[in-house]
Structures are given as structure tokens and as C-alpha cells.
Image (cartoon, rainbow, N blue to C red; front, side, top):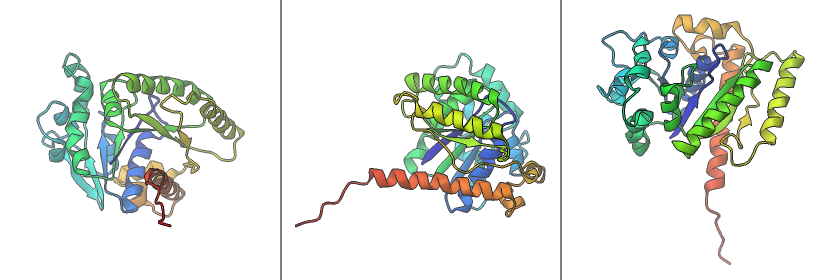
Length: 278
């Protein structure tokens, strides 16, 4: 089971859009996927048509140990489940401030999913901050995807994200790795987009091999600006369901296939070699 935290402390870079539409695209490709909304704004939940009211179990109830993850999970599409969130989740920053082992609440809750291989992918939409919710996602995840808008200031914010992943790797989750960087809101006709992408590629190629981002790749697929991506949440649908032939849907399906190709490469390199008998 691949557990992926989609994170960026900067808002408006396509984090929730990427979380939802990558999850939907992976589900379309036949994988069992759970989208987990860890943002108190609940935008990922709204995006797939779920408004978590006061009577609905949410991920907040998991953090407060009132319910299990299975009790919150809802089927929102073929092969696609959701663990919803609402504004109640904002209270966890205060309520867990003095709790023992507060960084591991989510990991402990998800342990039986990993043991049972319940899903092929769990995609966690993190809040645009580096608080206790994001830390819980990072202690639970094996991978981090970072959506990035190709602007100059985005590169400055990226260094803070890398510092956070390095800190979590040293102290809380040795298996955590930054494996993918998603270029979102991409305008292929601009020199700036190309320059920022090249600067990022150079930085990654010269990074210390011991860093959590040493093997990170910039996805070849670029998520182009597309008005349909902005329209889809208001209809409570992923872009795959709302406008399956638009450029946004095409881009996210292509990116999902890149992710699946990464999976195939990992499997190929981990297979033991077979020696033929003479």
C-alpha cells in the first residue's frame, strides 16, 4: 500500500486539486484508492460531493479516538473511497497539543489498513501549514508529493518543505521520501516556467544522496491551466467525472500513469534475479 502525503504550505498551488484528481485518476486505472482529507477546510471532501455535517463521522473523530478509520470511510466512486473532514478538524491543533504520542495518532489508526493491504493507494490532502495534522500525515506516509506552481517564490518555499521532511525523517519516520514534484498551473509558453523547472532539476541533481528528496523526480506530465479544473469542485466531481476529455483530465490521467510506471519500476528492481540451470 503506497501512502502519499500531498503537501505544500503555500496555498493556491493546486494541492487539493491534485490530491482529488490524482486519486480519481488512479481509481480510473483500476487501483483501490482512499482519499483522506486532512484539511479543516474540507475542500477535498466538497470536491467529491461530500459535505461533512455534524452527524457524519470524520477524520477529526479518528484523531479524538471516537471512531476508527473504517467507520468514517465512504465510497464516492468506483474504486475510490473518502475519509472526510470538516472545520472540527481545526480543533486538533489545540486538543492534541499536550497529548502523548500526538505525532503518531494517524499512523496508529492506519496500521491495520497496511497489515491487510486494504488499498493500493492512500492519498492524503494536507493542510497548507506545517502543524500537527501535516506532521501526522508525514509520520504515516511513505512518500511525499509536492505540487508546485512554477514561480520564483515557489522555489523559496520549497526549501522549507524539504527541511520539514528531513526533520521528520530523522526523528519520526525513517522511511519517508519525497518522490514526486508536480508542476501545476503550468503555462508552457512562458520562459519563467521553463527556467523554474530547470532550476529545480539542477537543485535535485546536486542534492546530497542522504536527503529524503535525493531520488525525487519532477513528473514529466505538466498540469496545464484549465478552467474546467476550477469548475469541477462546484459540481462535487473530480475532473475525471466532470469533463473527462478536457486538458485537465488528460493531464491527471497521464500523471497517474507515470505514478503507476514508478510502481512497476520499483517492483522490477525488487524482484530476485532468476538463474537458469545449465
